[in-house]
Image 1 (cartoon, rainbow, N blue to C red):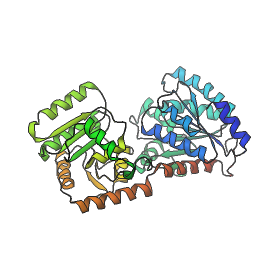
Image 2 (cartoon, helix red, strand yellow):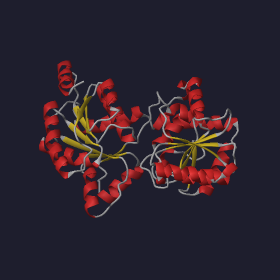
Image 3 (cartoon, helix red, strand yellow):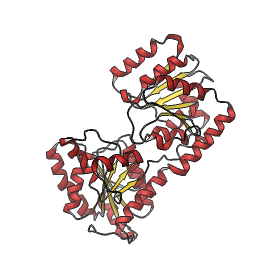
Image 4 (cartoon, rainbow, N blue to C red):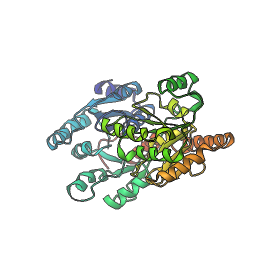
Length: 397
């Protein structure tokens, strides 16, 4: 659907509540992108006009399916000249589509979006998706654009505290809206045995073996090496550890060599990618998030619980807000392979009744607190704060 077609249809229908332009670098796989699409879909369903501006990517097709508009602009660039030119481009999009609210979800495009919104007198909203490194000098000034929204959304209390303490976001502007999982997709009752068999075969997993799954990009701070060391201490060769995710070939080779040195004390599978994560979680007995750096939220943790799988996560960052220790999973100190090994043993030693109870608690916990529908509804409520009469406006309050 084109910009003009979407805008015209919304006006002719007479049901336009307002127009929101979300701005991000690209539409590739990731939590920022998934949240953007979920909000766009909810806006359209609620009678709003939803526009997304980005450089494009494979997820752009999903916007068309939900009835939103995608505008292709070079918003991933950090080149100051491109950022300046994007102000004009975004201002034109805002004027052409009678945009009411501009929502920036990343720093480089936020600079363009901020000045385009100011030039056209539109409301400006930002989302902190993580804490930002570099809290001094030019880096801090670059990051600080995310603190300039009329409303500043943070994806966890952890990130919100960072926005307040480092960038002085006042409580009356700050809104905590956790990320959400699509529980219509991540539903254990909807994963067929055939889907699980396909993955079992592709991953060469023997029937009936316990499986520990660590999903995440192959980067050092995701903690793959911590899991390898923990598996050595666990000394259970019958347990298959699946490290799922792509990344730099050199780091993968380093991990594979470390796993090979363990000999018969542990069994590993290294998988580059998976297009059926719901089935992947169902294959796992335990899902691990071993990040050595605090994550702003941690999508894997809520997806696993939504699928009724216990999680072992590190006790820092957003994970402390999504895991209920002893009920939906466990928390261990970051980088502590000994503690992770001890918790893996405890989890693997659970009997059937304990596993079923934890599965039920995890599913209920996510459906009550961390769904994509709830995240989208809370985000629309923030937009409605800026348009209190529920009608479109063309000027900032």
